[in-house]
Image 1 (cartoon, rainbow, N blue to C red):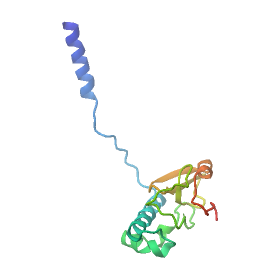
Image 2 (cartoon, one colour):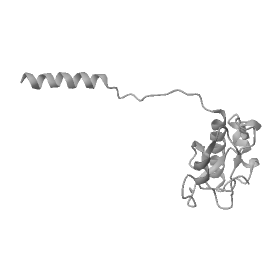
Image 3 (cartoon, one colour):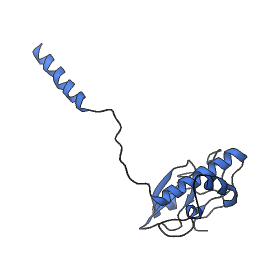
Image 4 (cartoon, rainbow, N blue to C red):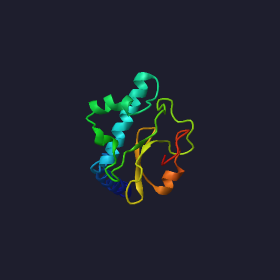
Length: 145
């Protein structure tokens, strides 16, 4: 009985040292990733409100402005170039054309071999050149065009 009791004490000590609280790592959001997230939110909002995808910046500009965006929101802080946005993609309907990560917007060059990419699901991924080449782009869009 005493061996059983000591196992309970050990188990209790182990469990009391384990926390179920999530581990939070605070890291500042990369400014270009933030720009892409704002673009994605405005893009999605336009699709939902108009039952069609945006065809250019003029369509999403009101939502960007309302969210505190400016002309700098459409530019990469890494390479200084305009962000490339794939217009005409209905993000509400998903990306049936995608065979891998479905791209909605991205940095033209990025920095240090990495570029930020906004997916049609609304998240931003830092991709290597290889990952970028393997990503899926909407029909009619060729990266770099």
